[in-house]
Length: 466
Image 1 (cartoon, rainbow, N blue to C red):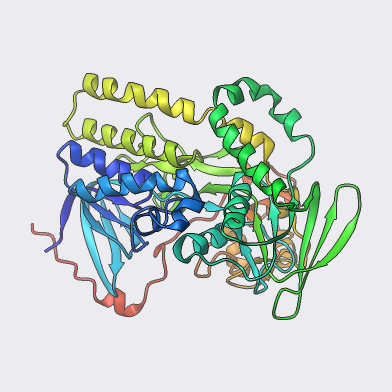
Image 2 (image 1 turned 120 degrees about the horizontal axis):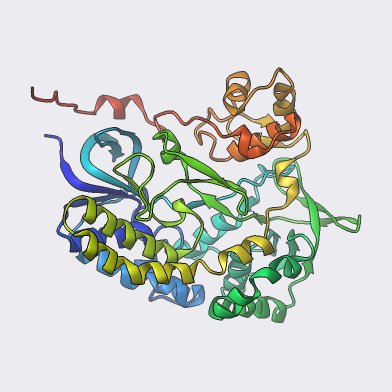
């Protein structure tokens, strides 16, 4: 028999857990499915097992804060199914998922997408070499198994995450060969319009300054104004080459290179559901169009957390709570007056938590070079297509990303465009001298995750009774 719930929540990070707790508080039946083996999402990954350990202490108070939410989530009464991949959602809402090799379809009145963010794809020559990772991937290894690279690492990029990771790595006994800061010059001048917001959110600013002090105290070499980056080696990273804004080019030995150019909302499910999206010029990415409760343009689909727009863990929790109130309102569990009264302090809190975001976007825009990589740079890792391949295809008529996909297979590999979609859109826009917002993004087709024939064959779909 097909299982039915009032709400299916996809993702058990800060937003998903908060939404589930709020929904259960309104008496709704809730199923939470998550790809990870335990709740916490990326930012609080493995927090239940790690928070009380020495690793939890070096990761900091912000990380350990997730443990109490995970405990409340476990007690809230929601059905929780980890190690589960959702690979299709159909109207009326049928959610198709796979767990331990078996597929199932579950019916829900409403769906909450709490899918978080992903690191922005940042291709450069050699980024596919063994030894080159993202900062986020390195942080996962630190959180889940306290893996610290044996030798000094190079960190290239900009934004708060590299600062946090470098501070955590140093606390764990790691070594940093150098920090290649790709933030364009003049960051504080760009941030001046939000100086008042920075003072109002001084606690968050102070955390970033504390990370910087840790990095400086450790004597980490900081190279400012890095504009281009190459990873060099045969079958393994051996050297890095970087250029700075003043025209200098430097080579240095390297065994591990970690890169990061910000994060963007995970939009594959909302794109697959054909929800409306708008281009966020400040963050150079797409975000779904949502109402005041987080409901997308497809009624019954709610988006919470960084998938609604980058805001961080605390903002994700508040967005999850607001989504729960919105669903309770639509389900008739709350009157409009009661929902508005409960939401008012949450909206005020969310505004405060997002107050610093425009300044961070101004301080740390993505490096321009990632949107215009050299011709020899692989931009679609799955199909091993280079920027030159995409430029040649873009010269045939006036193709958009989906025509480029047909010509070249870019975006047709296992990641389905998660690692190349924005790069392809920017290359096409540059070749056609059009705004990237006008060029658009891939259409996303099911299945949303790789699916075996055996898993598909295990799906038991009962015929609806007349």
